Image (tube, rainbow, N blue to C red; front, side):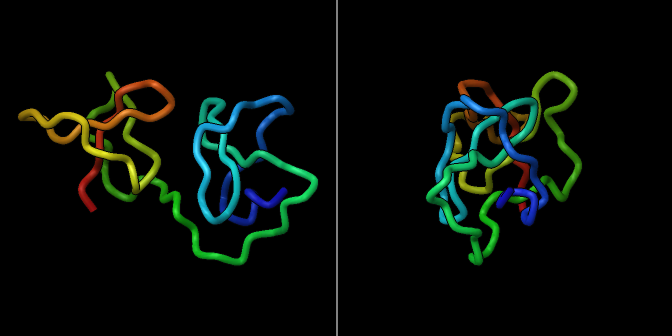
Length: 94
């Protein structure tokens, strides 16, 4: 599976596409996973989805955003908030 080379597992069959980048189509099943398509080639581009490097300030109530490209939807005293897969997530400053 192409996503394993990027540190992620492959999605179960039938998982809907939640995000697409240069690497391919991504789904979300308890974590980001790669959606395998028979016409997809193994990516050789740099990884655009970054695991959280810093402590997740929004946990345990909300997860931190997985995508570095998540748009800031709201900012409060705690930090910046985004939405991924229809759910609020905390954006960790890089």
